Image 1 (tube, one colour):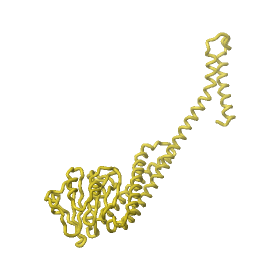
Image 2: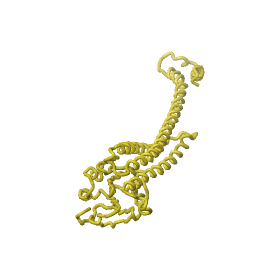
Image 3: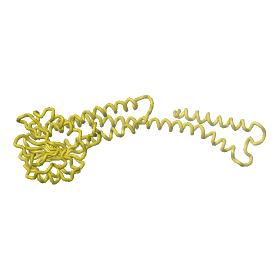
Image 4: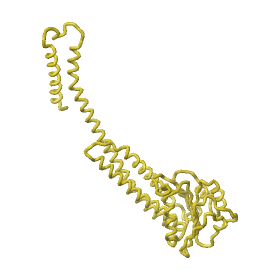
Length: 331
């Protein structure tokens, strides 16, 4: 397949999978391009595109179209799927992975496959690709071709979504118990990151489903062998996952509306109390304002008992305000 004897740049790992013998042989990290010429089975190459030499290596890789090379080295952050000349390529959404655990951060995995190879590339470590590698090493006999490797990759992504849905469900359960408690607490700050994850995941799933359906509707001459059946199974998987995510989306939205409703009710109650206090204090304020004027001939300025009479006016005004509020149904 290759004429140059150079080390494969940006290589994370490489496997030679032979369905006839049911084995998967991991190639050494310093494998040369000349060693990628296999007589039977197919190759799986996983590359790190942060190495700038990957583009040059892919230009010399036989069987790759120009569009497939561009798909493997792109830095675009949106899903894409295409079939062309018996080749399937594009970009998948997935979760990034740390050294010891998966994260909730969205990552992007690029791929291209034909009947003789599957090449995957990424910038950050991806959760599903590590699980796929473990599956290849554990049971290589079940991988009959590159399309089966791709199907398992997307299936691992769907399992990751299910795990995340369960985690987010537990978080929503805790928030829900607090929201529907008798005490009013603002849980919007805690709910916001959960809603953000759900909305992003739902958006990417809808895009992947639309792309999968559009690609499955391409001409049969352009499709790799077995793609139509694989696309149908993966569409069913992703659609089921999207329904679970959408159910979470609706639940989180209702929780947000309930929080807003309770906070609005609490604000209205505070405003009601302040309005009552204003209604009770306004008449006494008018009385004290009247007797506080520095004008001549004010009543009760001569003789004794003027302060008590003024106090009586204040009390009477408060009682009059109370009667009016009771009569109008405000109290």
